[in-house]
Image (cartoon, rainbow, N blue to C red; front, side, top):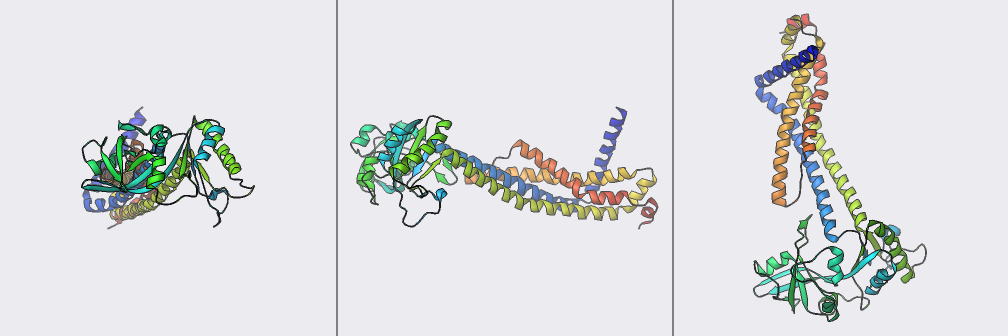
Length: 416
């Protein structure tokens, strides 16, 4: 017990000596910690931005819906290099076949998408129009916060009705309720029957900047680009009961569509089937690589800061040679001298790391408010950054500390 108390007292003395030395050369200490401060600031901010990117991607995928496969009429590059003559196609009949023949499917939502111009008295906006069926809301987990969503009757009669997003509502109607109002979509009058629940924005994409109309109405009145057939669609959302059904169903969809389009063995698929799980994994890997690159670049600053610590500590050892010799003459051990300079280097780095952490948290908060982009700095990151700063001090302060402990007391006392 007494040995532990004595050891703690010894370390306390080293910390006190380190703080005194730092105050004596205050300007030099500030300039020395600057490199570590910038390094820690850069690393923490890079980690925060990387974590924010992962959060945004997860939220973006969540807005599509869970346990869902997305089928698009685009040649699958994963099955081989696409050729110029390959033409993708997808129809509502394909969606009906998937619903009937693929196990575990809850619903299929065919869609057509097109950019449209919206006009109300005195206001206008350009947005993305989605031609859909009632299943679109079910599969994508979206509904109307005011009014109603599309019905089968709307689709069957090609009704000129629309459900609009919050951003579109703000642009066209301000604070007024849009339900029951009339808007002109590409000069065609539509009645707003519902306001979509707000989904927010992710990675610069505003999920509320859209309108949803019956798929039959968009095909007959708003489609500007002709399609190959009367029931062609832009994509299909296929909702499954659970993740296990999704994994098995993806392969079943591919086999079914290959049979329907008579794709020969070894030939490229004229369609692509992706699941929300795959999209999440792929984007997660991309953001992790992005984060690793940022951290690697930012770590260079930390390395430079560590080298700066080593240089200043070597200068400090040279300037305080007589002090070292006097301490040795009074009975200080070589380990005491070594620990003194190790603690001094660690204190320098901890102070720089703490300041860098504070500035990084401040910058992350400002970034979140200004750019509307999440940049979380977790408590584990904060603790690790300060601890890592101390490790940097011990590593780069090791050589100067060992050099100081190996000085000869007699030669040190003779030093001018």
